[in-house]
Image 1: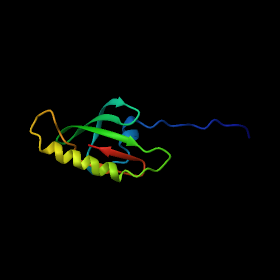
Image 2: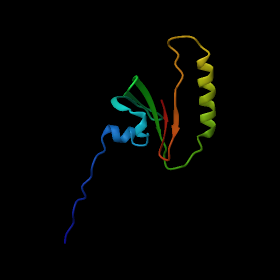
Image 3: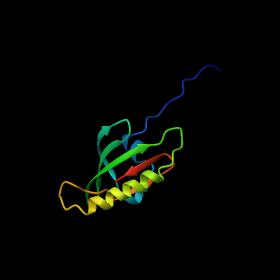
Image 4: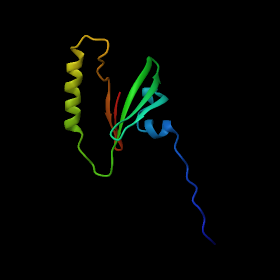
Length: 103
């Protein structure tokens, strides 16, 4: 009888940022590049090289991201037409219950 202090466990950075991505993506966290208010930017290692992952964590209110998804695909299609080594379109968009990922 008495008060007990609950033990809290801290999630590792990998668990925090990549927990919703399927394991088939084979991403290994290398470095957290930015902790912006809107997007978190992380650099990961993949079988084919380095990958930049942008993570948007959903907050309490459930917003519909379908309109943003359409816009992103339009931007990707536009970027694919530009032949410049400094312009790379994103390769993958994934939305889960807790976050949205742009790879």
